Image (cartoon, rainbow, N blue to C red; front, side, top):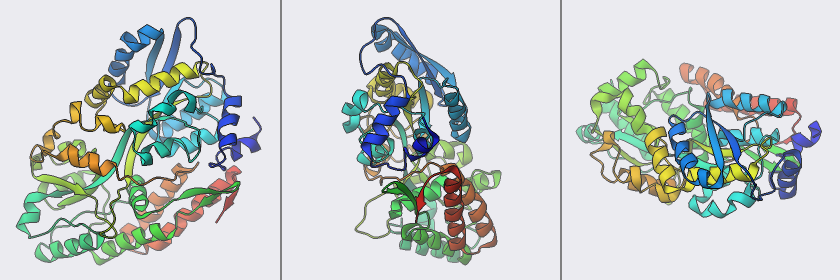
Length: 438
């Protein structure tokens, strides 16, 4: 496929014919027809325990259909994306890959993922609209089946909120007031920290505010990382950091763990997977935390952002795309498979039917004091805002860490850091050959 056509593939995310038919022409597929004879598929994934989950398929539905799946454990993030693209250039990519939602546009723009809408379109109703949308890139094509999600929420030390007479913030304005009130009552404590190491957290907060960082206009990409919604988020957090009412240090460090475990920081803006992190980061505070919905920008809103999550995609190099799609649908919608994914891989399922059953019938052990943890989580997950990812998320994320890292350390203008993030992203897309408009 010519380079120019490849680059245009995802620039027209609303052009269904290009997104769907071009991919079909570039990949080898079985046309959705049942094959005669055994089929062997290879699945690249980083999820722990996936081999045990796949065993259920191989001994059950897979055995019946003579479709065997072999798991090949991989690194995650950009490392896996690079490996997939390298293999695809040699036309040797595996049949199936685990892909984070923000990586899908990069893989699709390089013609690495197949349109599996004919095979999996009927499972759309198993997922929230905002989740399913991430696998379609705004088209009728479907490039993956959602696997796990990371709806964002607010975690706080219930005992210390009570001690200091603090109310759980329902709005971001109340969040700021709570941070100030705590600092007055306990100057040695912080409500939370702004972490410039966590691009996904910032992206989720911007998403909640209504940001759409990558969209299309005609045949061109539009990059709006410095849009009004994201500027609002940047001003808010930059103001709190400059004011000194929240910390400015990164998360996931020994110092951060200690701050949570000792009560120096008494809240955390995170996602549904937070209990697992808190279990190791703050083991001495088990049973003292509670979870609530993310603060809103106005009281009449009910929306959350997403931090993390991945999908199961079929590659264009697969000679058995229909068989691979059948497995991808089973893996992420079958009750036994989802229970096994929860148990073995520790995921929070994208499938709405699984969010209140099996492993999610009871709260996480760390939150045994909050019996309705997963009931609340499922309600929050339904309010996940649509995302808008582009083909160079990795560049935007790296720029965020550099620019916002310096701004947080110096307590300087977050707006300038955001503009740098915008400029770096546009410059990279232009260099790659994408048509970009403002």
